Image 1 (cartoon, rainbow, N blue to C red):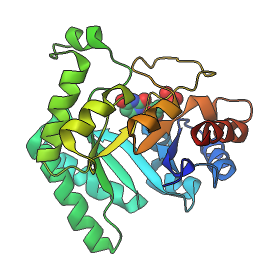
Image 2 (image 1 turned 180 degrees about the vertical axis):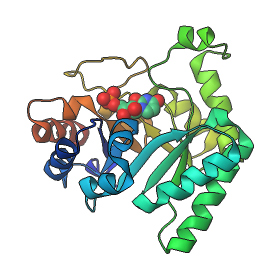
Image 3 (image 1 turned 45 degrees about the horizontal axis):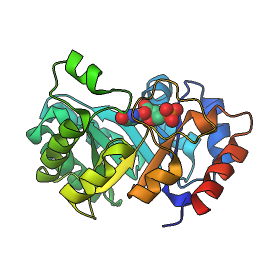
Length: 236
Ligand SMILES: O=c1ccn([C@@H]2O[C@H](COP(=O)(O)O)[C@@H](O)[C@H]2O)c(=O)[nH]1
């Protein structure tokens, strides 16, 4: 995979014209587009697929509900022809198994490749103190490892984690388990609300499969130049 192909740009906006413009501008500059709750909730699935065009799509809706409901949500999300979809690992084993099974069945019914089904471990905006505030047993790396192992046992293809846990998860879950990492910050970008961060180059060196990068690209005065700068840093 080339460095460029590893980058999924997070387009977080409710505005379909802005999303479409960004997706067109960045086509060929990155590996794919990630859309999340902001665009999806404002515009719905047809508009999302239209905005993204033919680019590989990561549908980041982080489903977290009872198994039957999550299976239904996964089935519905496959109409956007995603390359990756996700659920929260903390939804438990039965929920993750239901998600994987729904993705398998629906992709067969639709005659499309089965998307990678990922599980979110601990959000990159949380640190050890935040985890303890919500009663989760930290440190964050321990909770990430626990959830990643549960996800792997459930048939999930990989996890969303921070780059700081890559080395640990490569040792624990092996080379084929996909590691998709948001919380990516080039040295020249604002950190914002992210807490467990790393630079693109360090994340790839650590063994990330895909980097999710939003505001450092979409919030830049020139998003194409920002994307190219990141690719150059990865290639250097
Ligand atoms: O743990 C997680 C899971 C998902 N995200 C999503 O990734 C992008 C990051 O955007 P930036 O602008 O680069 O911070 C965003 O869409 C989040 O919803 C995450 O950040 N952390």
